[in-house]
Length: 178
Image 1 (spheres, rainbow, N blue to C red):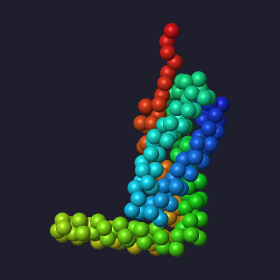
Image 2: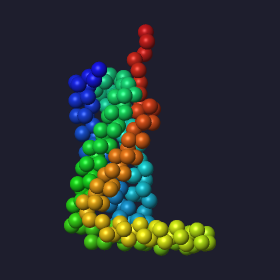
Image 3: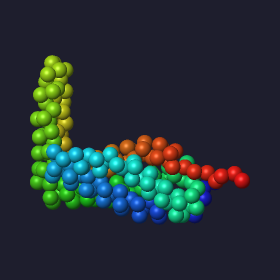
């Protein structure tokens, strides 16, 4: 049976944490686009599961007296990613529509130039891989801002769904038996 009060509580806390996760992703995204040679953007993106785990433990301690089931932990993690993805998609739409002016495509092409030589050294398969990557970048450049935002949102939700499983597993805590 679904405990409606518990679900409402999880969703309320997840909305709050989703805002902070979205801010983390926005900072990561901007660093990756405008400073691609810096590793800070990638480090912020990689910190996502640790951030969610940290916030899940804080939720567990603050709202649940230190105990949380796997199911509730998974729901919290998933909803946090979902709400963050919605906020991040809105940000990305606005960014691609009004502020990008080709910066993202330029960054992708620059990165392509860097890895191109390594792939071409692999012979015919490497050359073919470079060709496929270039076609992908060209397809990316032809997408509208709403398509790009939706694409990233779906990717974030999918990856977040997968990451929510181990996060909930590692952060669950049952009551100690007396």
